[in-house]
Image (cartoon, rainbow, N blue to C red; front, side, top):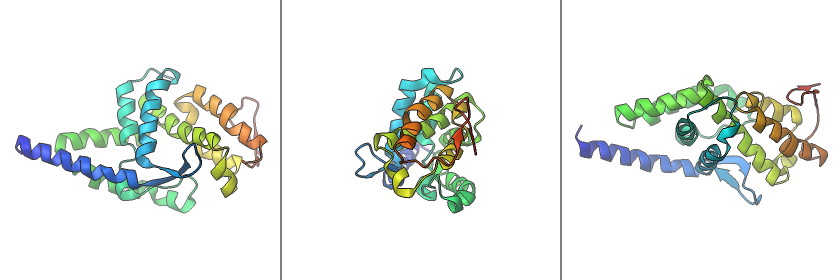
Length: 211
């Protein structure tokens, strides 16, 4: 492959991932008027990683975290967004996203394909400090937007505390500080306002729940 062919392949990929801007999520922007898209979500997380890295449970490679959060949803160009509370969609999510990853990253030159795929696989595996912190951010960001919209979609969809806790069951693995903050500032206020149905109760340490 010539240098010009390599550059052309990378530019083609850059154009391809513009499609991420059209993948709509189920989280409202702070004004509550429209839903965010995948690209907005990834950008927001990347900036938040720069700002919140000190709250990781473990020392992290910040550049790797930023890289992970920027590419973690690129596969949705082909797989589409799987809503966190879509029980049927979640059953096939891994299979669909693995197939999408094969298709998407193979569009890159081989060395970059390996690099990007490894970052995506690292995020999926939850095994490194960087992956765990990236997941914490991936959970923290929509909770923050839920609170900013005063629980708009939670109230509209009749969301329950048990559903939210299940969705965030591993959030503390990357950052206990961010999870504790989420409980006190994003979740509890919406319960008190009746926007999130309290079908379970927090245990004493406020990190788990019991029926």
